[in-house]
Length: 375
Image (tube, rainbow, N blue to C red; front, side, top):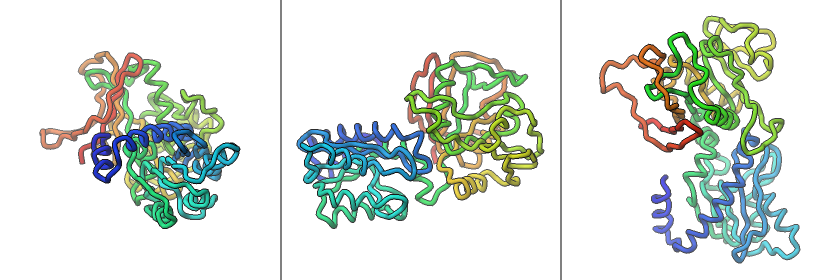
């Protein structure tokens, strides 16, 4: 949903322009808080909450990690610790619908009711069947006014994998490639270091850190010997607090070299195919859709980052399994003999795959494109 559509929809629901502008301001603050937990909350969603009364923040918080209190609880605790703050009658801004069920923690909807807030503004409803609409209904049954849809697109993008899986879908798949202006990803020999600059390469750490699994093919392992792990993120989150993604390697012919770098940490490696390596979990060959569903069901993976060559990347695209294509374009030309971005055997215009451009952003000397397939 675009910001214009979001604003129009909320205005149509009777929300005054002045109130809407204020709601968007406070929700942006809640989203900034939520992002502080985006690398540490897996498999839970990243959520932020801001409590506001008389135009002043009286409490705020974010969900840092599964098993720890949710954002609303931290915000209520902070407000309660301030002797001058009166929670009763406040407005709560939450980036995701407050939970309505008992899990590791009690329901946040109940906590907001007990605290006596007057209004709850939610960026998005939750798709978890245990919550979906139930949290909002519980608040309204207690006489609390609710608004849904403020900064919704940004909030949903922050938890795209969680929301998709909870709605009954497969994990959210991001396919990342680095390419030249002429759409090449490596020289004919396989040499590819480096097409993009340091800033673009550093940003890839973000995509890995928000993913439950990083997936590649054995060809990439043999050509580049990558680690595929998270080594640093720019917001300063300590590396020890970031769960490392599962590094999934498709190796149908059992070609995994025993001295591959990623095998230095075998506990976070998953081989799919014929390879057998001591200390490494192995799954049998399966098609890509089944693999994604197994990662969801067996490993609680919500987001998958595919960092692979032209063949595997094309297979994901042709199977309709890519939700987001992330392309880093470098201002360079590699020539006609260099390897293509994707090995797609198209012969007619009718076969083309079209995308919607979501974002275009300079990153150092390169350009990052985020695109979504037109379904």
